[in-house]
Amino acid sequence: MNGLHRAYLLLYNVILAAGWASIGWAAVREYNQSGHVNHLFRATEKSLFIFQTAAVLEVLNAALGLVKSSVMITAFQVASRLFLIWGVLSPVPQTQNSLGYVLILCAWTVTEVIRYTFYALNQLNMTPYLLTYLRYTLFIILYPMGVTGELICIAKALPVVLSAKLYSWGLPNAWNLSFDYYYVLIGVIPLYVIFFPQLYSHMFRQRKKILSPRSVDKEVKSR
Ligand SMILES: CCCCCCCCCCCCC[C@@H](O)CC(=O)SCCNC(=O)CCNC(=O)[C@H](O)C(C)(C)COP(=O)(O)OP(=O)(O)OC[C@H]1O[C@@H](n2cnc3c(N)ncnc32)[C@H](O)[C@@H]1OP(=O)(O)O
Picture: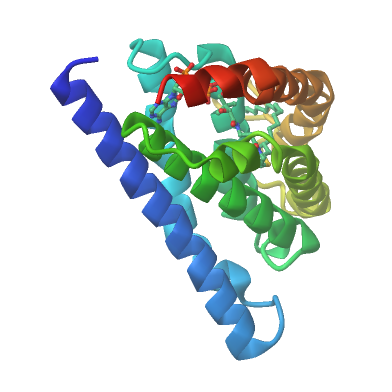
């Protein structure tokens, strides 16, 4: 890894870690002030949309070989989140104050603050064991929590999309083509059933690899 490459990744990780921390901070502050979760979306939407959208770079980083992450796994992870924010939360206000959003906000924010801080400190060879442990342990709860939140938001959006015919057009029209966004949303649900177990088991394999006593020994000896 050359200097420029290292500096770019460090900057990317520091900005993303700070961005996600600011989302978490805005959520906690809003909850402390109002005592309920009804305005969490309003308090966090701008930064959430900016920093989650910036994760497109993650797919590019993997595709260009700047990081060793799997392109496929990263692409599914990022695509599902982008679809959620731009295709569900943004156009369907009824999803924004749902339990689904609270679950998403908690799961994504905790995961990303830890993950980007881990990457940044790892580049500086300064990762405390506790951070590595959290990165490869919290996902056990946070992943199902995030997926549940995402599916709740999609389920909440379905009747609204159907009745408002959101992003949908029927025949007759000049192109002789019909499109129903409702069925796109329905079609995404089985994708979760197919891909989530693969992403989840990937993280368990990573956990075994990184937290196994042999890897920890090697890490300690290399210092
Ligand atoms: C219309 C389209 C709809 C599509 C719908 C499809 C549905 C599919 C279902 C998907 C469900 C996903 C739901 C999800 O959104 C819910 C949640 O996320 S909830 C929150 C909990 N989530 C998590 O905990 C998972 C987070 N993901 C990860 O942690 C993974 O890292 C992942 C991003 C998936 C990539 O994993 P991978 O194992 O491939 O990579 P590593 O992170 O281990 O990294 C490999 C090596 O590269 C180095 N690296 C990576 N990135 C960086 C970086 N930014 N800076 C520096 N270095 C980096 C990393 O250190 C590793 O290096 P080494 O091997 O040397 O240790």
